[in-house]
Length: 254
Length: 236
Image (cartoon, rainbow over all chains, first blue to last red; front, side):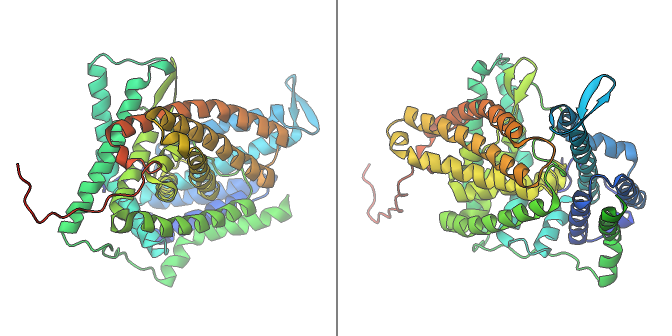
């Protein structure tokens, strides 16, 4: 991750989706996910159609499905929860391959599985097509308080510095024979966390002094980002709007 | 310690809690954050941006660090109580929230619709409950470094368990499938164990910071001495 320029999920490109203003994409992603979450769990076909909408976005953004699938694996722990639900939930049960499963649990498990998967795919799509800097300026355009945006910018700018510091400390411990396996061996690791906090905090103090000496008065220059025309909004919110309509239709078809 | 190979989601995903409750907790998170922004400014004045930025980067980096639990099993810190004790509840909650926001937007860790519930549990409940416990134990914390570490342990443990109760509440309002008793038992039981790890790491980290720079520990900080300007030269 090159600090301030890219992040691990970003996939450089120049597609229609990449070129959309970030704030429009953020709104679109939130609306899409809320539509998925609001869809009734028995409306199986609706989830399929919402997935197809996402496929359309990937085609427009030229994101290969394999690349997406690998990054969507982050959601794996919740798949475990979804698989466990049919065994532990209450209510009427069905026999399936000699196992007694709860009907309500099956539906609840499916609910988490499908909504979690669509949700993580939307998040990955947003991250894949939006560079870091645009994301924060997009947030500021959406009236997120300036303070939050500035903290977020500085955090992202220094994250790689701090993470690299943590890596060097770990390397230093290992090269001195540190090889912890059990919880009671974590003393050295934890002392490094303390040291890391001190180094981060003191770096913050130095950054503040450096900012003061360059004329910082307590407010940062405003973020600049392109505004979006009504046509851009309409085009960008097309998938999200369709997802909302599908969610509403789900209440009739089930 | 295993090198960090892949990130797995540690935060709630979409679909666990229904849409109305997600939106409700989104509003709670926004209100809580607005309050924290205002109070953080009072704590740090014009230093807010750089200090909070670096503390947030620290929280992010520490969450990427794995601690050994057993061979093959490792866990990572959540950092709510740690932040509350070291930088105060307002800056702490603000930093943890920004970390959660960016993890959801950039790393797909935690669902977008679950952002409100995640911020409420981990940043707001986590930090403020942890700080409340620490303030209640301040008399012990200021007595010695051991007392401070004990306070940090208890604060981190309570913070982890109460944050999981936040999840139970949200599940009760907008989840489906499991009986509430099961969710309650699973979540509190599991988090009572996680809380021990969180508590030990928080206590040792706070202890390490207090040993080197006791003036940086927000909980035990009295009032920062004002700058003393001497016009007369110091005789050597």
